[in-house]
Length: 396
Image (cartoon, rainbow, N blue to C red; front, side, top):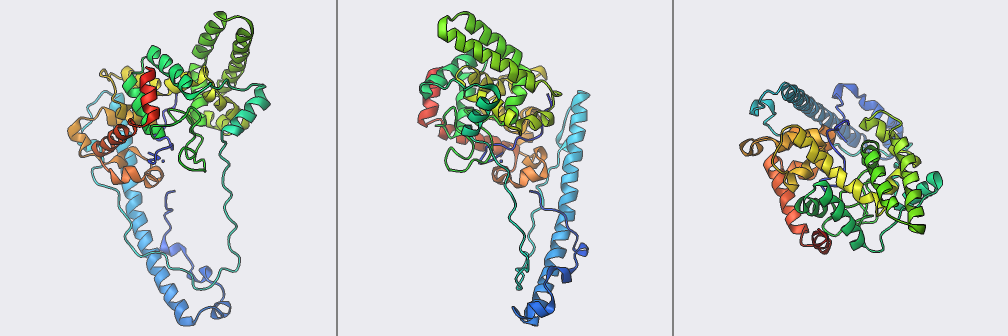
C-alpha cells in the first residue's frame, strides 16, 4: 500500500493551490496592457503609469516572497526525507529533525487592478465533475447490473457498522468520535462531503468515515478477499431469495475486486481507476448494508494495524487515529509517536505539502501538533452531542 502524505478530504480542515513562483523579471509589463491607443479610451496615461509602477512593486514583492517560501518548503521536504531515513534505520528522531519556524506569510502589496479592460477575457475554467450518489448508482447498474442494498433506516446501518467494527477491533470511542468529526455528528451512511451542510459536493468522500473513491478502490484491492469470504459465509447461512441476493452480491464483489487488483497496489494507480465510471461503480459498495460497514471499518483499522506493526503498542486516541485517517498512515504516525513536549513546538507545516497546507485554515490557525490535536478533540467533544453520534454509540 502506498501511504500518501495527505488526504485532501473533508475537513473544514479539509485537513481540506500553491501560488506559483513568478520572478518579476519574467514579466514584460507592456504585454500586460492593451495598446496605449486602446487604453487611452479607458484611462489617462497618468493612471496607466501609476498602474505600471504598482504592478512592478507587486511583482518584485511577490518574487521575493516566493523565493523565501520556496526555500522554506524545500527545507520541510528535506527534513521529512531525513526523518524517514532515520525511522528506517531505527534511529531516534529529535527536534532537530523538524523545521521549527512557521511558514513565511506574504505581507506585500496586493496585485493592482488593470485600469484598461481586457480585450479577450479568458474563458472560465472547466470544473471537474464530482460524482454524487446518483452517479455511483447509475455506474453500478451500467457496469455490474447491480444496485447496493440500502438500509431500511439509518439505525440499521449504524448497527451493522457497530457490529462489524467491534468484531474487527475498532473501539466504540474511536468509531463514534471519528464519525462525529467527519460528519459533524449527524451524518448518514450516504452523506457526501459538501452535501452534508450545503448543496455542492466538494469531493467523493462518503459515509461515516468519509471514504474517497480512491479509498474504496484501494480497500477492495487489499481487503477484498476477506470481504468475499465473509459474504460467502453469510450466503451459506441463508436460503431462498435472500441467499440468491447475497450470492449475486458476492459475484459482483468478485468482479469489483478483480478490477481493483488489476493494477499495482499503489495509490496513484488506484486513483486512475477511481476517476472512471467503473471506479464510481466500485464506490457504490460504500452504500451497501453488508459491504459498506466493512469498508468504513477497515479504513480506520488499516491505520490501527499500521501503527501496531511499527511498535506503537498503546491504543490510538480518536484524535490520533483521525490524524492518520486524514494525512495518511506514515505522516500521521509521525505526529502520533511524537512526545508531548515536541508536539507543543513542532509546526503543523512539517506534515504537509505546500499546496495542502495553504488550503487548510485549521492547520494554519492551529499551527503546532499539540494545537491541531487539541482542536480535533474539541470538535469531537462538541459533535458527539449530536443525535447521530449518540445513536451510533448506542449501537455498540
